[in-house]
Each structure stands twice: as C-alpha cells, then as structure tokens.
Image 1 (cartoon, helix red, strand yellow):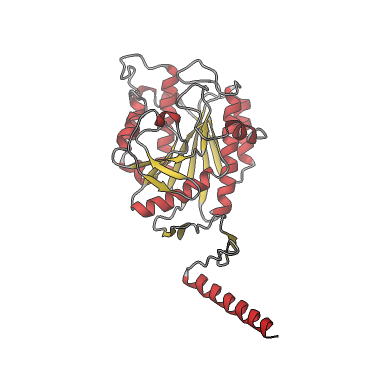
Image 2 (cartoon, rainbow, N blue to C red):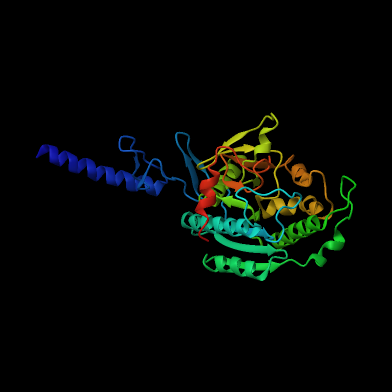
Length: 344
C-alpha cells in the first residue's frame, strides 16, 4: 500500500510540475523515457514552437524574435524551353513539362506539410508563366486547385519588359530570345513580390524538386538564425555541387533538421524577405536589365553584405544534366525524390 501511495503522489506532483512548466514556458526532458512531457513528444520529434522558440538538443532553446507571418511562392515556369543556355538532356531524360509538373507537386506537398506546423502563417502561390501551351497551364491549375492555398497563374507579356533589356551582354554578345524571356520573367516576379508579398518570398524555377520538409525547415531556420543574428536573410534551398569546387571559409548555423552554411553564390532560386528585396531593389532589378557574367552577379554582390545560407544536405534537387556542376546535390537520393512526385 505504501508503494502504491508513493507512486500516486509522484505521478500527481509530476503532473503539477509539468503544468507549471508549460505556463512558465519551460520544457521538461525525461531522458530515461526519451520523452518531453511538456510537449507530449518524443525527443526525436520537432520541438520548435513557431514564432516563440527554436529548440535544438543539447543546446537548448533560442528565443524567436523574428516571427514569420506569411510566405509567397513565386514559381517561374516555361514548359516549351528545355534548357535556357544548353542543348543537353536533363537527368531522367523527360520532356520539360514533366519536370515542371513534378516540381510544382513537390512544392504543394511541402507547403501542405508546412501548413500543419504553421497554421498561423499565410501561404500563397503565384505562377509566372512564359509561353507554355494551354494543356500545360491547365495541368498546373489543376494541381493548384487541389492545394487549398491562395493561388494564381499570370502569363508573362514579354513586350512589357523587352525594351528595358540591353541587347548586348557582359561578354559583348547579343542577348538571346530565351535569355530575354528569362530576364523578363524574373523582372515580373520581382514586381509581384514587391507589390504583393507580406513577409517572406520564395523565388523558384520550375526544375527544382523539393523534399517534403523543405519549406518547413526553411521557415524554422529563418526564424532561428534571423533571431540569433538579428538580421534578415537569404536562404537557398539547394546545396549546389559547384559550391564545393572552391575552398572558402564559412560560418555554420543550426536549423531545425539541417545545418546551414554561409555562401557567396547561388542561382536564381532563393527565399528572402520583403525588407531585403526593398533594401537591394536596384541590384535585383539590374539582373533583369543587363545580362551579367555570371548572370547572378548582382545576387553575389548582395551576399557580400547580407547572410545567404545554403542547407547541408540539400532540401531540393536541381534537375539539370548529370554532368552539370549546378545540378545534382551531394548526399541526396535523386531517384527517390523524383519518384515521390510522380503522381501529380
């Protein structure tokens, strides 16, 4: 009887302690049972509380001072151009539209998972399309309609921007029609972000396949690292292989499930805030008016004064040719992520 009473008392006091800790914002870890009773989660589950604190064991918690309120995805699509500057085939050797549909599916799936963790965050998807055939546009709209997120498809009018593009590039060559359409699409996307974005914006091209946790990890990482550094960020979703061709010193940050390292270069798929966009507006727009070498040079110039971070391992696969140093991320199951997005 004594033993039973002792167990009952222990259980009672434990419940009271857990309730008090919840009220005060503390966490209790029961390492013997691999459990966090204050959150009713096991130790290997996500313990972050969006907008309040980021928890990483054994380092403890980071108070979140930079809360994410909204995320706009601006998806640049063009199903009738296989490669912008090359004639090579892509990994898996499919029609361009197949990459577009699977890429969009991966974003919708990742957004749906993120919404479960961030019910208070406002998500929306805007597709800026250039010259895709009607059946492809219908397919993209069909995918969006199943997503339950605010969405829209905007058809790019090339004439709106063509006269603003210098016809000779940094290498003293004529700017191609394909490149003009790409620059115009970026320009339109930037304008949409500037006028419609409420907080974060993710600019993404239509040949990136995302892991299911990609958007959730980017949001958690943004809140944590922005709070730690007290500055706005640029996040790249992809661990590009070309980043390993040089030996550069860097800084490493902890996200929720990934490490994040400071990089000085990316391609044109990245996440950032409206604040960064407005602060460096002239540099962003210069990328749409003059073809630099490399094309992304204005972005690289921005990264000299702002933190740009890339995940290790990658959160997204860039579906280029197998030999491209801008494509297949290391330490990633390329076939798995391709197959996961087959049923769009």
